[in-house]
Length: 107
Image (cartoon, rainbow, N blue to C red; front, side, top):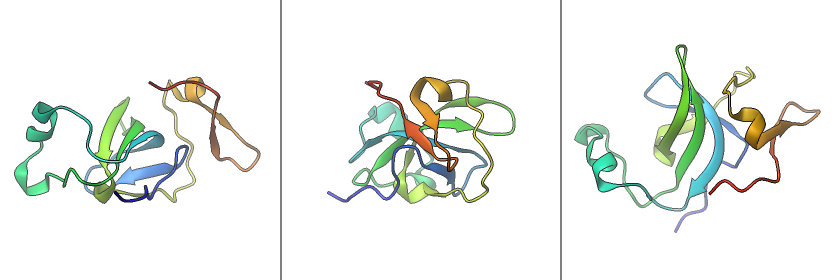
């Protein structure tokens, strides 16, 4: 089992698709349905044996929850704030502009 590359509260972006988000939970390996996994086109389907991240995600049109493999994420260095409507339920922002988890249970 690998150590997760990204931490809770970190802002990341998808390598292939135009969205970004804040990590709010991490699974050490794939932990979703086979139906969900099989719906990913085979040519971009990630390996299950890697960390998968739950994100408060957003794109130019909407906000949503995303589940993304580590291989498809990279650090977002834009410095832009995230505007997800659930942000304040899970995170506070510290004096350095970093997102810090509140003391809440995710699942």
